Length: 622
Image (cartoon, rainbow, N blue to C red; front, side, top):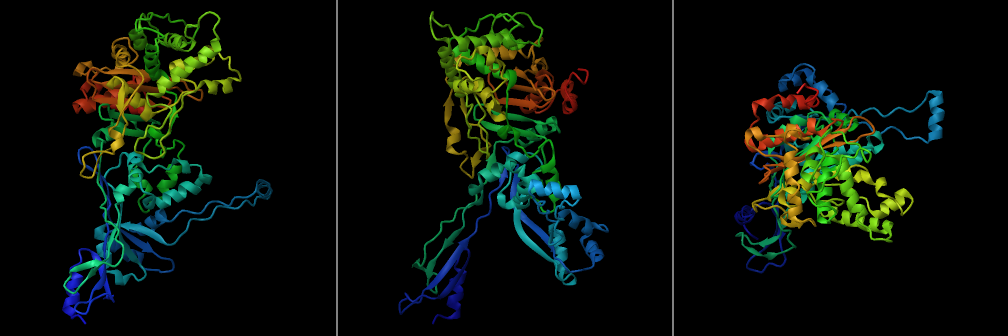
């Protein structure tokens, strides 16, 4: 038999938590071998922004459990923790687990009970057990006096912790860290908001962040020497840190600009596809979905009519409005429907034009003034074409619309871009077959689909797609898939697919032809005059949009990039019920560009920051 000293040496030779069993029967007469097990448990990786500022990590947390039927001196406990009188009771009330769902009855039975005034009530919230978060100092104080409070216990474990209160939809959560929220989302209001679940970067990269536990099974002798394996090993993989492309200061500034209004802001670097800021408004504290004792806040978020839990830039597809005129113009140039010097009259009999302006003698002027009749006639030239005598005009319209859709789709539309967040939506582009079905005939005319010419009607884009369209124009025809993680671990690189270059079906010359009109829109008389940054030496190129809304005020949108010659930032803004894009969305984007490129805001625009949170610049007397 081996001596005690030899057994101790064998145990100390393990590099991780492990154990050794009794001597193995395979040992030879000169030496006995021990079946040992070494377990390596990885720490979860952390999230950092592009400037290496910590965003989220798994940190030690302490949780106090209050069991049922164990009375204790709450006054003495509050004094021990340094809490004011009644604090324990208040915290316990806020941290109670949620109630179960209300009983679901057949409609006939529910009507009968309602007539008798005996409808069943929803269950009361569970009272026990209750878990309260403690700080490290509070947990240490409790452990010193644990004997005075029998039945109470403090649990120590690692939990997801956020080092910031911004970028909630981007950072996300793991299902394990948000069990109470997910239960609420599934059951509250009959599951109405369960579809809003979005794990963000934490959920998308969960496997990389978590790593993999390693279990090794060496046969060791009394000297700690390894003599093979007695069971199959599991290879250890450490959790990887993720370095995000987010600029935390820019993200916080964008969230402050949007305030409590519904909408989105997306900013990205066109040359790399790295997303600099991504705001879904109204927003919330990311810890609200995972932290202990915040069930009341979770209920409020789920029931909020503004739906703050909806990740709008990725999950909501809307008509893009006049921003889409850029795509229609580029496609018309590519398909040879018009040259860049085409002149069209502002014919109000075709479609209403809300901007008073001179005749658009070319594409640059049409973009500057965002002339609706001009772009009506542009898309009409694409769809109707120039039919030869005796040709089937219906078949020609079908073929031309299919060619339009094929070219537009190459901008990354009507498909999932592949951004690294869960549940991204593809948007929608109508097909000829769609209109055959919707119109009930194959002989539909352009006049019945003309809303496509101004980015309205059936067409839908997400905020990430809109920003990517502007990145394509900035790059003159190519893009890298937008992404949030710029480096995984120590590799210094994102996932390989985010390095692949995608090219559109539109030539660079036809995309370059759009830029003079986008720059002119920032000049005096242009629809985006308030987005000009010429006073600080920055030339902005962009396009405003006003999205028609039958249920209330129109939505304001703007998308552009700066500097116009060598773009470093693309910004897309969409603000619901904000009216004209040039009075709210455009100046909002300009502030974000100036903040990123200059690091500060010029005094003449500083007061805009507050005004834009309340309305638009016109309502503030600009």
